Length: 554
Image 1 (cartoon, rainbow, N blue to C red):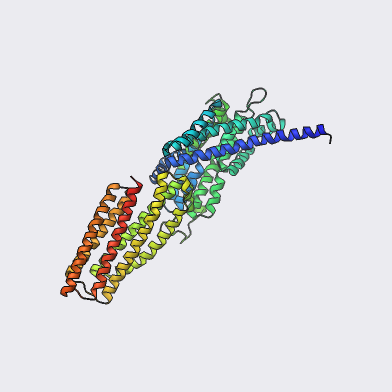
Image 2: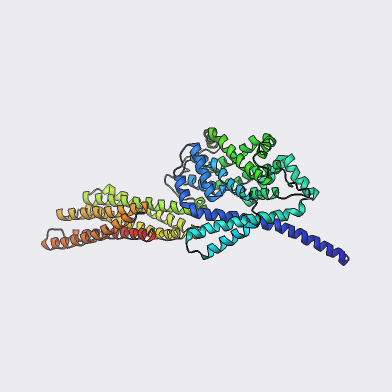
């Protein structure tokens, strides 16, 4: 091959490589910008998402608004659905409630497409500059997160520009024009391509933004290189593509969670089947909404998702019925108690919130152990003492499971205060577990007291009952402070612990005096003093919990 031919071949290769890198590089930046946008919005609104999901009802309309709202806050329907799978798997949400929320999850992601449809020219450079430098220079965490949102939007627009530059050399290439044209003439091709792209990128927002970028690319005559029909086919295919990950996740989950993944897929498949015969009339209606093709694509995406969700409102019961018949619950599959699910880790704030709930539940279980220990010790009820021994094993398992789950929460996805709360929760788990151990000791003392017929004097019995009640109240207030994140109750628990210390010393002195006077039986000495010591230590752990609340939520 002569040098001139080699030069032309090399130049052609470099030209195609540059074109390819423009498209792939632009798509990579687009996916990163959407991921950064989702992460930043998630950190800003993570607590609100959790609270909104908690209020989900059996009403399809309410659920749809909840799903739309939570997805707007994260800009990822996949995150919303994966969170739902985790919640259903953990038994926090019913399957029907998750279906209600799913109706709105796709609506929330349409915001990204609406933003991508704006033509801001070179204004993405100020957005990138402002977002970057404010994030670097600001010390306020919320300001930094807002700056990241601005920065991610700037990246999104520059990605759209790069993709358009990449497609520009292809605009007059007959093979490329015929291929894109076929997606409109034969919509099933476009749907399959959209499904493939979204399945690979796992982002319907990225796929729709890519289609909008195509809509902004013009041929030599000034016409868009893609038709609205082809664009709609790609966008509705993108909805189906995001179901792939949910179906894969559902494989290893419990059957209620598998139903959630199946329902998400059915909603998208049925929606596509219903709209498919009317694709051209639908496109004609969408053309009336705006003269610009990019905005028409974004509007088509929004209208399609809204109409599919509204269409399913009367049929939620039927959808639930079908999923329950296709995937029936096997007897004994579900555990009778709550347990964690790795799907919750997709939203760090939600995972932290669920960890907090579990710590509170376990702490309440140890409070019950304390109450049972008191009745066993004071009233000689051995059956209650044995119940405490059984509960202690459960508490150990719960604490170990919770600690491992918290260790797996991605710290980088949390706000600064949430990072601190995560560390405090690990400390509180240790306190709760120690309380369980101490209650176990008290139960064993009660069993020994009854079996060996060791009597407490009337004064001793009244004194230890008083200390039990004081410690029980202190620990209960500390748990309430944790549940409500109440600084006033945390201070109250700390003050009550000081009173417990004083009471414990008074009771010990009174016991020593009775021992000298021969009022108390010698055999009761060790049991009584050890019971006082264990109760005082429980109070100390309540004090630790209260201080952790104060130090975290100043």
